[in-house]
Amino acid sequence: MKFLDQARVFIRSGDGGAGSHSFRSEKYVEFGGPDGGDGGRGGDVWAEAVAGLNTLIDFRYQQHFKAKIGMHGMGRNRTGARGADVTLKVPVGTQIFEEDNETPICDFTEVGQRYRLAAGGNGGFGNTHFKTSTNQAPRRANPGLEGEEKTIWLRLKLIADAGLVGLPNAGKSTFLATVTRARPKVADYPFTTLHPHLGVASFDDGEFVIADIPGLIEGAHEGVGIGDRFLGHVERTRVLIHLVSAREEDVALAYRTVRHELEAYGHDLADKPEIVGLSQIDVVDEETLAEKRASLAAVCSSDPFVLSAAAHTGLRPVLGAVRGAIDAAKEIEARSVRRFGAVPDEGPVKADGDA
Image 1: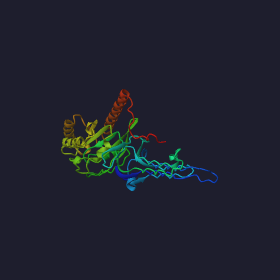
Image 2 (image 1 turned 90 degrees about the vertical axis):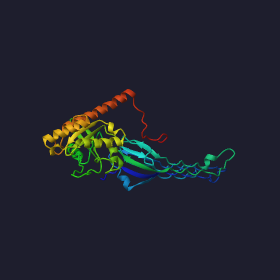
Image 3 (image 1 turned 60 degrees about the horizontal axis):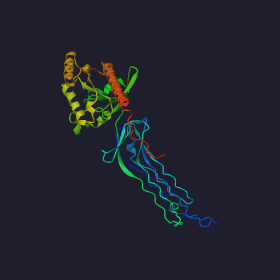
Image 4 (image 1 turned 30 degrees about the vertical axis):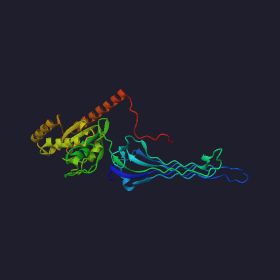
């Protein structure tokens, strides 16, 4: 399945049905009076986060979603049927923006969350509503209100515990393929990875999700290469795994280049806990490895892990450190909840007043 993480969609809720202008006309019923029913309400447009989806590819083939209109009212005080709703099913991690692609509407972080994007128009009143003691034969009925229409943007940010970052050909995809069952494309040329990939890694008695994104190069935040838009997929992670290839002539420069792009991207990405690994160590000798490890340690202010995913060397210590960072982040989140209490859910929910 092709990966798609952004889509532009047109939505329109249903118009309300018109009220009926009707009078009773049964035989032998004198002064029957008005009996026009109300129009039905137009259908709403909803968005709902569902399980089993990890891409917005469905919205490449359908970009228009229109709810049904409400039925018109009828005589004998019969109210028109309500228009059917339409629901956009999106993966967890989807954000929805207004047409400017900047103003947020909602953010789905859990399966089952729903949000009404456009409300259907109310049905019009039938002439029964206008009957009074001085106007017992009203000859007016209201038309239904029009529905809402707008263009929105859907933007997907994958939900993962850890995110892989680094220059192109730093060994990120090989690492993901080795420690998980994911099968990203692996080849020896820049930008082999063009789309994010997810994999579930197992360590001891637990599991965590790792996201691999395309490599970053100098100037990615200005659109160089394939840009830095894919960094959105690691915004929600608890820890970053920063891989630097031992094949780099200057590993310190390679590290600083990626860190600069993370800082330029913003969204507190550079402040996340970071685990640095010197990868592809199977291609250098012991002396070169020692020099590059020392050079990398000097700029990242910690002793980097050394590993080779291709040779299955040094992977377990890295996975253990990742698992420890994730558990620590979860504990901090739990303490925050216990200290300040549960934060009221202001995210996507069913609109008030709807059945």
